Amino acid sequence: MLLVTTAKRKRMPRAERERQMIEVAERVFTERGYASASMDEIAELVGVSKPMLYEYFHSKDGLLLACIRQSRAALREVTERSIVGAPSAEDALRRGLLAFFVFIRERREAWSLLRHEMALIGTPAADEIEQTRRQQTDLIAALMSGYFDSEDELRAEASAEFVVGACERLAIWCERFPEVTPEMATGYAMDMLWSGLSRSTR
Amino acid sequence: MLLVTTAKRKRMPRAERERQMIEVAERVFTERGYASASMDEIAELVGVSKPMLYEYFHSKDGLLLACIRQSRAALREVTERSIVGAPSAEDALRRGLLAFFVFIRERREAWSLLRHEMALIGTPAADEIEQTRRQQTDLIAALMSGYFDSEDELRAEASAEFVVGACERLAIWCERFPEVTPEMATGYAMDMLWSGLSRSTR
DNA sequence: GAGTCCATCCTACTTAGAGTAGGTTACTGG
DNA sequence: CCAGTAACCTACTCTAAGTAGGATGGACTC
Image 1 (cartoon, rainbow over the protein chains, first blue to last red):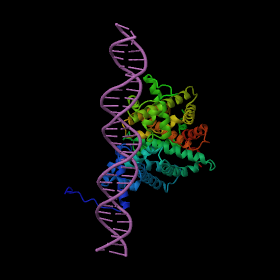
Image 2 (cartoon, helix red, strand yellow; image 1 turned 90 degrees about the vertical axis):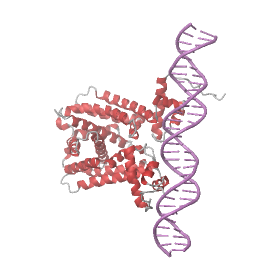
Image 3 (cartoon, rainbow over the protein chains, first blue to last red; image 1 turned 180 degrees about the horizontal axis):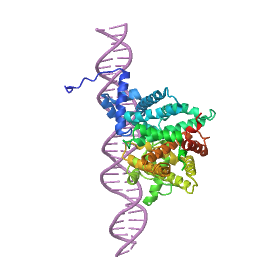
Image 4 (tube, helix red, strand yellow; image 1 turned 135 degrees about the vertical axis):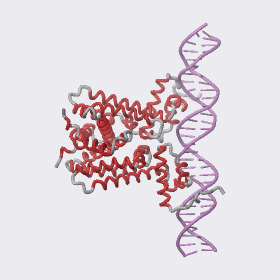
């Protein structure tokens, strides 16, 4: 008998196994990076054979996509909750930003995963990725729409992309400076977004 | 004799061959995407054998990196030239933005390549990538420094990242709308950056 | 022209890892 | 107790990254 203390590998219902696989994959993708992560390793860590991964997620891209979808959903949830009941538009913006910068600090793996999206450009999953991203920008675009003529929808959408891109990049930058708190980051972003550069015309 | 009309494959000095390889690789990476592009194919299109690619660029990552470096340099050159002699800071900003949005429309391949950067996170080349990116933000940061207390260097740097991220994302968005001219994109970005959202406090 | 040196270039491999064919076993409801 | 099926496995194939070791054009001496 080789198995000594190892609890005998049990069968599991699909849903549960799926959750488990995503959990492990999230960790491995984050640690090794998408390209260097191997399906064999993930399978082994889950305690299951490789074909199971393919049965459930169809491809390596598919597995990454599932992880990303989950992280996006979590991020969206957090930001959405943060802005309900904000007394003003300015306040809603500030709260949303803070929620975001807190998220990227506390849910490291989730955020790291979202940065791997780009690994999928040029693959069939690219469209799906665009969808998950839209989730984010649509929320912002809705908030934005109050600021522009309702006809100029293009501008509202552009502005939403602008904000999302700005904050994502700022978030990546923050990782290099642990002393930059979510509050500080929010401050930087808020000043830029709300007041713009013209304020200090000296 | 198998070679009929094919001009006999000539030997070339290293520098020239290198340029040729980068040129081909740029095209292939852009068309197929980084992951789906194969070194064999690139080698064949160059008219050379695979070990030559490795001799010159050491790895697939290395080849991509070389392409990216070149594109970044081109982008930097264009934006830098555009702002010399601008009469005001506002004008410098506008000119720089316009130059950028023109670049991404006219130099499709170069720009597409820059979007593939993320494919390298988690690889040894990641640091180098960060360097090429810094090129861009440093330029902006220098412009920015005039707007903030000289002590608050952190804020200047953050703002530079903010601007770069915002514009990159906006540029990606533009690709989906051919009717959005570089001038319009510049307008959107300029309004957000210069005036901010507070202007329309209704 | 004949010899020699080295940078350019090649053929022919190894290896890692994505993805698959086809069969086996544990649980579930009758 | 006996299907029937969902969960699972072993043992492959195949593509593409990366490499070992050798061949060759051509520039430069003598």
